[in-house]
Image (cartoon, rainbow over all chains, first blue to last red; front, side, top):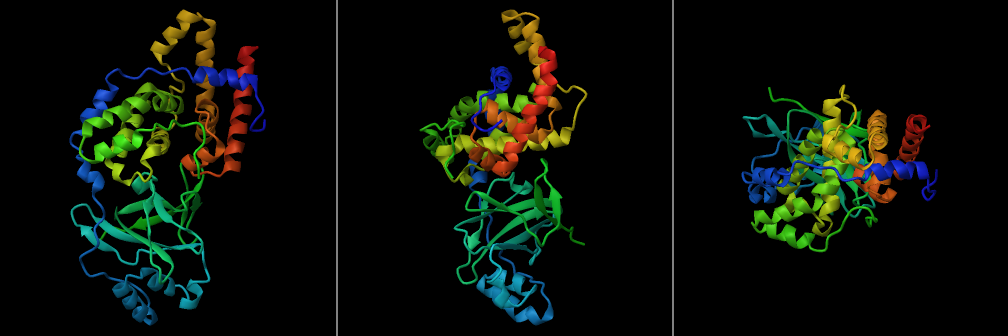
Length: 198
Length: 187
């Protein structure tokens, strides 16, 4: 059946399924009551820039680049440089790279760590991070004009998290350098595993 | 990407969102009332029980509220909320797995149906619900989005993160499977 072909049998099924469903008459009340503890300031809270000194783990020859990245806020350079020569970084457009370059403890009680996601995209006008940690709702990534990389740091609890990059609001891209997992419905997702701090 | 015909776009959603963000929590009730029926129906059809559906829907409303500041296009709050709900349904479906009770028994709805069209319609409704829950979750999702929510494939792709061609295949297979399961019943 193509998109426009009318199928009376399917239409008959759909007609039944379009019938309204009765929910608990107090549903709205329950939702609104549950909102009370959640002040909107929670929604407005943004991830703050880390105040602590960033620890960047890279191989020895890349220490200089990493240090420059740390000071300049160009994490992508440090991360990518640890994989290949800096010149190659800008050739490999549209190739996502994820690296927990700076596992920065932010919550000792809950073992939450700040993880930095980096993506180098040649043509994208916007890049966002989506994953099970944000209910697959886009968390915008910030572009560094010097490196062309997009980056965002988010706090993640120890454990396994699935994610993708979302380009221009429409294009889903997995990270070929990260392990893959099948999503709930079979589509592949990238996986980052945050190790608990020793 | 422009969203297509299916999901409601209410002109004043952006105003309501702005009110809530400004601290008028009560204004959120308008959004709950506005989207409860359509999205509740989707959740029930997707998850198979009213209890699970209400839980997923409530969770979606609460998550949307907490993340309201991140809603980049408040005029399309409904689409954004629906995306959250679709994910909650996926999560709920995965967590729950298949239960013994694999079809919707909305007793109130069944009672209504029986009053309008006794026995036959009630049986037909039950068979549809049973067949729907026998579909693979991704096929059920695609079928519901396409044929019940009347979404276009582009919008479905935006909500599910799945490519258009894959979605078309899922809908096709869902239709084929439903036909096999239900044509026997129809005789």
